[in-house]
Image 1 (cartoon, rainbow, N blue to C red):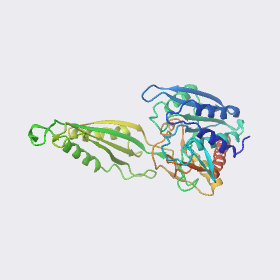
Image 2: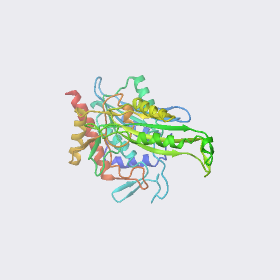
Image 3: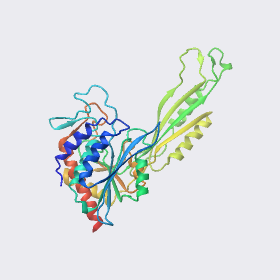
Image 4: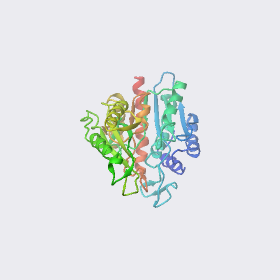
Length: 380
């Protein structure tokens, strides 16, 4: 059996791998070397081509008795670029006081390290455990978790429950878990006009007023008022572009981009169509890109297992939330009920990203409790 103190060593080894999206090679070698001695059958593969690939992925499984429940741990080993100004090297993990520093300490190599350590403390005959790990969650995510899902379906290795280790806690470990996420769609808007001299507007067609009117109508939309579990959907204007360096020229084209984060009262297709119709009304075009649909794992047996495990180790009951951005849970929800729970997210994507060593060790115990209770409740 493992020891919860192993989690710090595991986290350090993973952080030391410079695995900026898309992660390849070394970080997967390191993870495979951790899982194989624990009895996991490890499958690695590369999917996709330029521009959104190639992407390396890993699926590992340790089978329990026939018919036993299958719990999947899911996450990503890729990280965002380090940026400048770190106190110590972003990929040179360093313990300073009670904290472990390094890119990915929180998002989310620390959680993967905790999952590995928890797996070491769960008997192989308790149930089936698997790891669903991609190298491209922070990037386009086209050939990452979706390709893993295809592999799992081909193999018939569909989990009954999935726990994603994204950093969900806000102020202290255990105060929040995610039972759903909003969907996301970006829409690229364009209005064509006809360029000309500003002193002769009758010889030109300025597209900017039409784009401004289009954006005003879109910005005024009230998509909904929220639901029991979701906040109201929101539409934000995220870019305006004319590209006109001259002061005396009416431009030929004007562009904009909007981003909509939406709850489960909508679909990406429905919102895309609504925006497209408004764009056409103002003489423009719309190109929607849907990156995820909303999902909800309604509170029930699985959320109760997670909540009790967290409360047993931290003394607090996690809030069930659907706030925040998207994650790969938006894909995994097609397989089985999915809940996200992990470390505090205050330093993720920041310079000097750090995790409390005490939190890492507590997370091992939480993940172990979740696995054991998931297997026990299925057997009873």
